[in-house]
Length: 104
Image 1 (cartoon, rainbow, N blue to C red):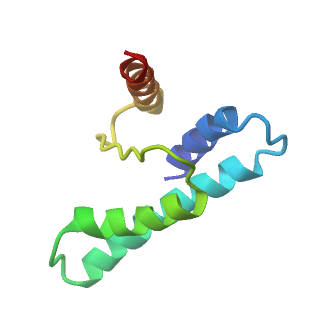
Image 2: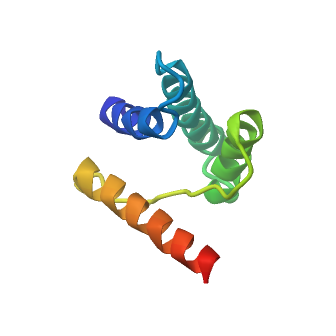
Image 3: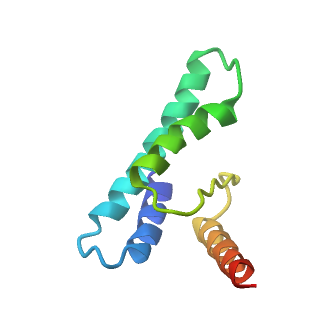
């Protein structure tokens, strides 16, 4: 989890480069991890009854409403063995594709 938070914070730090101390990036990254964990724990405490995706989406929606700007939210599912650089690379390529689609 720490590696994921660090990678997410590094990405967000580049995204919010105008914020010199990186506080926003690390705060959002920590919020995403906390919300994700909360959604999973809530689902597990219910005896794994119900829809885990809805539980996590509900928790992440709060993060989005708190920190979000206009735009969409992206949720990535990856194997734990996937190197973080591949996950970040795929996210960046999706954003590039989305940018091209918006201009067409």
